[in-house]
Length: 301
Image (cartoon, rainbow, N blue to C red; front, side, top):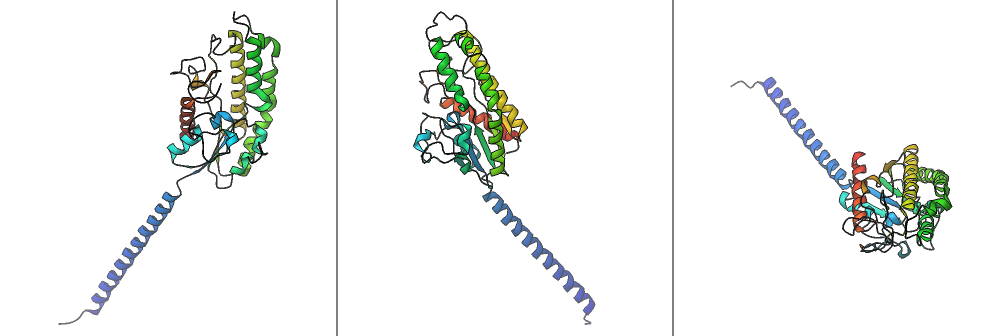
């Protein structure tokens, strides 16, 4: 029998090429597997939450075991609920009573500036701030409550008559501070997608509920205007500084502090649902978490 060496060499080359192709394919699959495994291990985004008491959730059980005691932070606030739902790594720096200046300066001894939670590895940031700037919320509610407490006949708008445009002017003057906060976040966390979280509806859109909230109908309308001014300013500054505004006001209408305990998301003067006076109750924080998650999903997160 004659041995065809050319044919043999061709078959050998084909076998060799086939083997090389299989080896290459195997290596590629293994590489893809490693890449996929590595990608799967890094899909837990780093989420940092900044903000005041509407973010921190004071009085809502259970308290956060990792937050400073003075911050009255809840482990069931919207950042914690959002991080759990998304399976993200959370650093919650929110602290009750915080103002814009507490982003870059210590709010209390042992409570570092909130911006220290940010880094170049941060992927997502929420910030809810502005309500305490210029003593806005507390000043407006306390001042109006004191002026209206004796007005059980629901006459006029005593608070509006005294303060006029004062609170609206305070909101306007705070816009540069909010812009600086957003810009500071971008500077310290340049890879992060930033969300500015607004404030939910506190008071009814019409009427009043004296003495549950000791305000006249006229001053309920007046204070609604102040909160709407604040949210509008926050939205404008978010848009102007590369952030996304999370509207919690509009979807919370009908769940204000004047509603029954089963309906409201914000506590009245006497908190009965968990949480503290004139702040979100547990349902309110849970609903805010859903609004935040919806906004994040719209941004592809």
